[in-house]
Image (cartoon, rainbow, N blue to C red; front, top):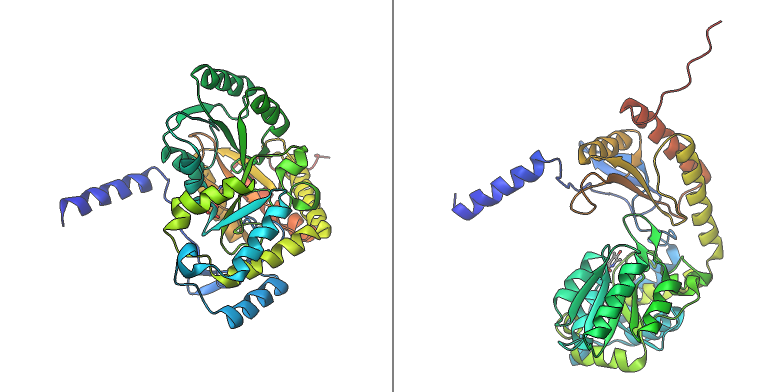
Length: 406
Ligand SMILES: *Cc1c(COP(=O)(O)O)cnc(C)c1O
């Protein structure tokens, strides 16, 4: 074996030895609240508590129908980047639709929000500029920032004092443009960014605000317009995904004032050098926005599921951070425990995933559950019962109260 392969094998062994190995389970049905997962040559039916399928649209008949129709009318794909010969009417329709939904003038599509975040900073910010980023921002923001030449500042998660100190420093250094960037919702904890405070601070220092709203678009705020709408503020730039609440297929976007979007069409590298989103995906994403906009019933179901799960899990003695987002982490501590808990729950028919270093800090391993409008109150009861059973087996929570002796 070559030295390179031997070294890689050693590295893989270390990942396994540290209980940090990430596997994949194969789902053999459509993504939904109830799915079947391959196991030992069979398929096990489980409740799904770990998809980003917040509104339950991933398998919605109207979205599937919209995609089918677009497949028939537009074929599979464009075989081109957008600006050469890859722009379909369905793309520009979706761009207009998402821009107005999130309250911005214009929008530009990407193959994924990872690409939107990878391509947004470099055209806007040069060496004379500054970017100020929350410590817990998504990996794609961190990578996107690495690709631009602006001075970088980082503040502790939600720490407004540190944000203000960074703004002061950046202004003091004579920065031309300052961009504050934050996730609208922090995906490991389900915390909302303090957007009113961030907006006020940004305004005080004449800085722009960018929000990555992947865990909000479609289900947070009035009509699901996102975390800026929830906070009653306006962002200068919003990035988001169609791969979560809005159908779960694929695609990302940058929404902003028209000159910003125009500049992205000229300069953003993942846009210029990568194939266009398949038109069928664009068609189903537009339909997803229609359903999300009108979907107060889905949002009510989602919110009720989240509050039921939080209440029942806390009553059972599990440790959950406060919050109201449908991301609900169950804190466990060590990676190994999170792995064991997830494996035990799977055997009880509940599909969840353990999260551990490097995705979350060491010692803060957890099961991150995510509620969905595709789940019923009975499903939530069943999931909590499984958590209690496995939690007792692992001595995470107290056992049942002993019967009083006569
Ligand atoms: C999921 C996610 C992304 C990436 O979105 P994709 O469309 O899946 O590439 C970016 N930012 C945040 C905060 C996310 O949660």
